[in-house]
Length: 314
Image 1 (tube, rainbow, N blue to C red):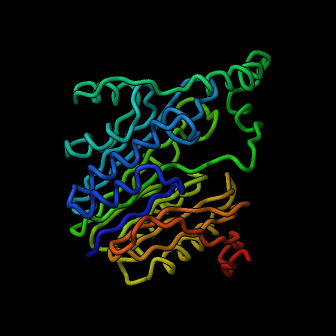
Image 2 (cartoon, one colour):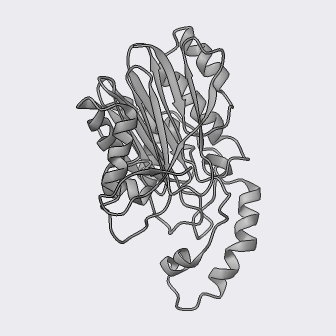
């Protein structure tokens, strides 16, 4: 097994150091926590952490997960408002007891783990909510919050990527994820990020997978675990991703929009496919021997009709 990483965000922050640290023998979990947290703290990244969108009521609710591919211990956090989640998720994983903590309970755990609360909602995002969303709430009458979420439209070009990273230190795999989720989501909504097996899964024997964009789809299909199971039976990352897309084609009803599926096997061979994406999707990849991480474009695919043939978007 060689040293490598794949990060969902195409931004480069922290990746030069991540590659150097892996080469120098630093723990893959330390590398992951640092490389994800640097994006959590970036006020310019509107899909994760401090720069992310709050929920419909203007309250920040953050989700995260951490998984060790050797033991398959996991830590998942959802709905925290006073902590950036990747550090909390890692500490929960390391406890080896519970696997998923929500809201206030997750924050109690964070404090008892020695973490201090920190700002999670930027002033720019608070002002944007005051300007764009609060007026809708003030005049909603008897309309439910779910109906308001359903009617809201979002710019096609905005960043919808959860931050997820899979890394190998040459001994095994781990993965970490963090997100602020759906912009102006219904209070309490959690997508696939903290649902291990849906948005993220790693097994050091075979490889790892993660998903971004419409988490409701990968949650319904258990997509990340499905992809790793395909690699377990000998499929390549590309074949595993295409099998997952075919599986998704059997979903009916509900929300069926864009979903990006990332796969990487234990030897560091990646494949990423963007389903129903209206714009090019990129990710960052590095392996031993590369001078720096490479920005690579995902394969673009239209979701086939039920059981139909997969056709790349040219």
